[in-house]
Image (cartoon, rainbow, N blue to C red):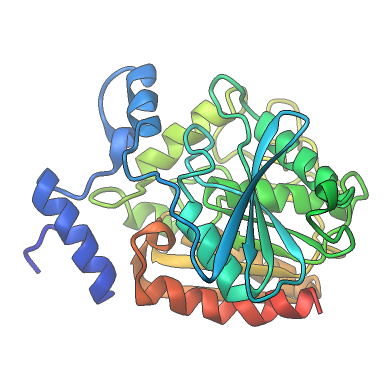
Length: 333
């Protein structure tokens, strides 16, 4: 293959999209994450992404702007009827993104599942590092648990997120399990970050360049989000749940895979892309949840990279959302 696309990306529609990007840029851009230069310049480039737009409402989904005491939110409501609400955190490596960058994904998720999606404009690092974004997501979940000014059924709630947002959703699910956040019926984790960057993981070793997310990029994001923690660090201290493992190590609420116990967690839906540094940790988390007798739906999409769910509508995105929809509908039945 000579179109400039990573050879492991074999999905035809996804490959065609990336080939168009490569034709314009000369290579598959890993964004500012892999570039040389100061952090402020790289962050500004990420936050100025021109592809982040709010789509017009259509016959399938309407969108409603609201807020939780100043925290901006956007509710996506299926017009054909809905049951349940997913409180959603967008991607962007914790340092970029807003209510627009996952707009198309939120609309597609609402349409596929028949659930409302309440997207949260949480605070970003490095100005607001861990756990600010997680605290904002919890704030939105509490707003939903109070009825969100009549917009949602407070008894039918879940959490969801994409990429870094999947990390926030998984961490909030741990808080919910421990009774430190409102109860939820499901957690939907789309290509999530679930652990600190680990260069020894096979998926990290295999995905180092010419991809929308690389191992280097993930390490850069992590350093901006979790400014006082180390890298891969130790495994969980026996008996720990959330919080930190040991002095100076990684907080479990930043790396949910490190939780010593997952039993009692909300049912989970986890999506992984095969050509992604994060794919191994997603599968490991699904395996641990299953071993803890937590109902878990795991979908690994072959031949696609990280971010495939936010590319222009492709069969890969639509088929994955169709595959996870039954678990979401069951949770809210």
